[in-house]
Length: 123
Image 1 (tube, rainbow, N blue to C red):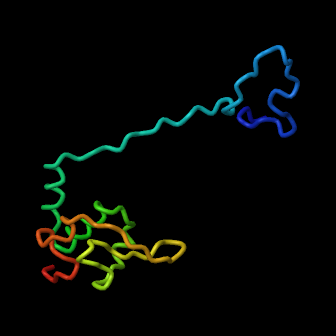
Image 2: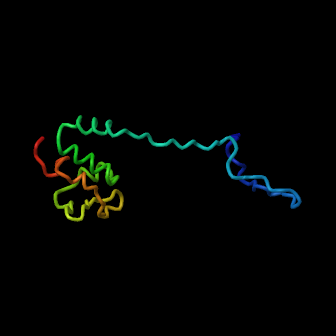
Image 3: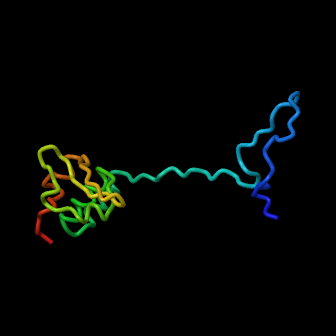
């Protein structure tokens, strides 16, 4: 018998005495909560190292886009020039699953010439 599973027909506190307090029934026994790990952060100098290690402006621009709006890699790699609204600093991505298009905000640094542009051909 699996100690983690409750009996299928047993109801918690089924034979409860109304004069007694209820037993807590929140979690199944032997199933401790999983601790949540905090995401590790990189210092500014480590980010500079990452950006300088990239060989092309295109790769730097893609990484800056990914960091600024959190889009999936497949969504960013399928970007075309018409998918960028330079004036409003938006990028159009096609969402996974629903295939719906969505405009996501982008930081000014991701679109700045310092990182290169999506259309740059200096590879």
